[in-house]
Picture 1 (spheres, helix red, strand yellow):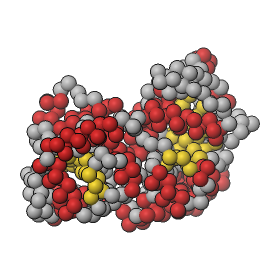
Picture 2 (cartoon, helix red, strand yellow):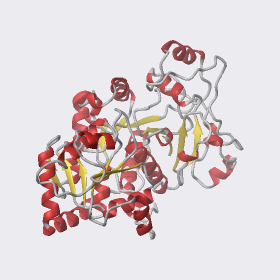
Picture 3 (cartoon, one colour):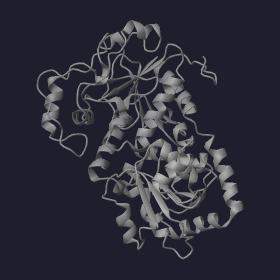
Picture 4 (cartoon, helix red, strand yellow):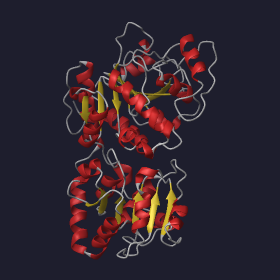
Length: 457
């Protein structure tokens, strides 16, 4: 079975949690593939896509439109799509049209884009010339995604990774099955935490997924229930498959002390941590308000995460809550190695989100034995189980009280640390990949293949 995996999110300005999901799942899928199976990455037409190259994943191959034009086309149900594969997996709601091809961009597509005047994002669409625009060919000797020349197809076939990719433009091949991951129900349940355009676009693409996807993956049962309330997806097409903890953020590097000094971290256990893209639904305002409560234990707050939308700035928000620079430090977007150091030395992780689909930082912190306080957003409660303390969404007093309990009670810290480590072991990318391969086979009509723990079929 050949899977075309869309890796476009890895090239987004802020890949975020969905970028992490895309990279970790695609890599694990390649790692857990049975003999004869393979994963091929696909992305929009552009130069310099090395960041979307993943271990064991072929490509990435390029579709026939740049990102903005591709998003515009797909939001209208037209445009190019991966071919020569049995299953297409869209790990975000940027999903291709049913029956699209990776070859010529037809005049109807060009006219659709010209008439729209808008792209699939908040930016204006890139211009599309009227003459034919073709995708990256997968014929022998071509250069996928602008990188070095790939081995000829005969070599690929010899390795049983992605046999017969040369028939990528063979129109006789049946339409690939479409699998889409919907990470959360925020566009329906909390649209005010997105831009108006973003909320509309996600709802539109969610409705398209409900109509055309052969299977929809969600990360938790909580999201499955929320999605089912808002989209007409039959239960047999809705599948909850959990996420995992990346090895790179669990393995503490040997130079941890030097990294901690460079980052300006307080002593181990001496700070609170928030880990999220800066956007309204992540609840940073609640975390900052908690630092002003009478029972606040006085630990500084370290924030890790790239700027998102909404104009949020950690220092500005801290000042608005009456906090000086000594109480709040922001590190922005950092490497996985640095993140492992920051996580391993945190005293408490705070996850006060208004809504979540899974909550990767929760299990990442738990894997390090760091106590966690979450909001009562349903997905966070499901993922954390009984291994975290819970405060109501937006309840700064409850959040501060929970932190004070952890800081002041060594027995509680120990229990949460042990419970968290155990809970984190339930979430692995290998398990997610195996469940996803089983789903591919179910929708693609291929026989199940049993894969042992060591990866052998």
